[in-house]
Image (cartoon, rainbow, N blue to C red; front, side, top):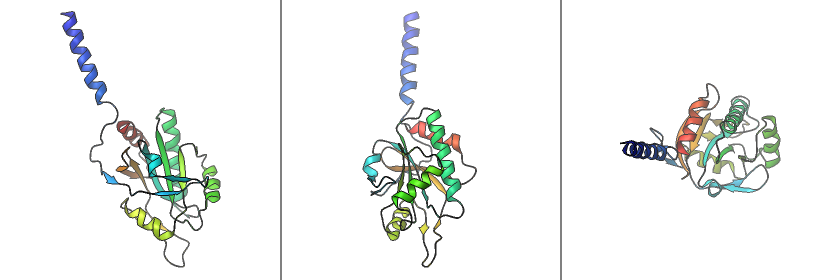
Length: 191
C-alpha cells in the first residue's frame, strides 16, 4: 500500500513539476517581433538573434523626451532590480530609441547611468533612420512618429513581454501604475 501511495505521489509530483516553467500566458498576443540588428549603447551590434532563447522586456523611449520616457526608464530599472531579487535568470531588457538622430550610443550610455541600469542585460538601441524605427514599431502594434520640424516624438508607454521565440506575449502600462508583480510572474511563467 505504501509503495502504491509513493508511486502515485511521485507521478503527481512529476506532472506538477513538468507544468512549471516554459508555460504559456493566458490571452497571449503571439505577435512576431520583426527581425532587427541595431547598435547598442556600447556601439556594438545587437539584434533579435542575440535574444533567441531568452525572455525579454522591451520599450520605446528617447532621451530628450519631456514627459513619459524618464518615468518609463525608471520603472524598467525597478523591474530589472525586482527580477534580480527574484533571481530570474535568462532575462533581457531592451529599450529602442525612437529619436536615433539624437540618441547616439554615448548619449544612451549617459542616459542609462541616470537610472542605474545594469547594462549586462539591458540594451539601449539606436543606429537606424527615423523612418526605420517608425516602421519597426508597427510590428509591436504601436506608434513612434516624429513630426517634421519637431523635437517631440509621439509614442505610447507600453512595456512588451517577448518569449524565447521572439513573439510578443503581453503588453503592460510602463509609465504609471506598472503591474510589476504581474510582469515578474508572467516572466517566470514563460521561463
